Length: 204
Image (cartoon, rainbow, N blue to C red; front, side, top):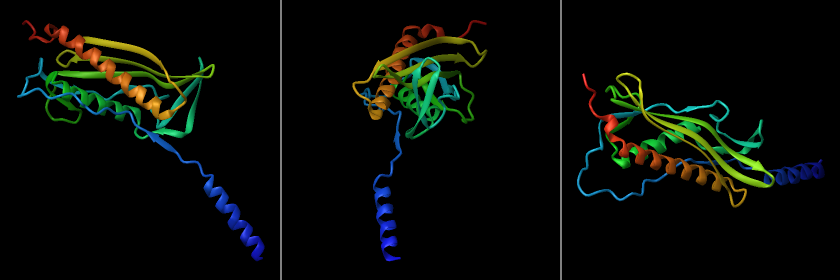
């Protein structure tokens, strides 16, 4: 009896040592821009509301997607997003817009005030690409500013970027996705500032 019990304890200990840990990764960005002295008004007069992120159901999961062929994907079991991508991306956009002072005010949904504009985002692909022993971070997205008075799109920006990873490191993948997202937000900000006349008052 006792030898059998001892063997069971030994086997249990070995299994616990080999237990696989599920690791979680974040899409995030800390606004490290220097704040200008004094309060600077937004370039665009009015209030902008950040819409819910539109994302394909394939990618709106905590599991990270691995694409190994044109029509073949798998989900990592032990590598997952800490938050659903739509939630994490919205938080990055909110942080970015607030720090950019691009509009007079920025809010997420559920605010009582009616916004002048809506910041709309579509994520078409968010994945690790594994191809011929090479690993890449792939993010395909679109940004739009919508005039809330009539639903027209004032300005838009799209990017379909694939960045190679130096190694198969999921933390590096998450960092690269975050960097791509912020880089494209910067590009969209420049485009908005260069076309600020589109946001002027409508002629009667």
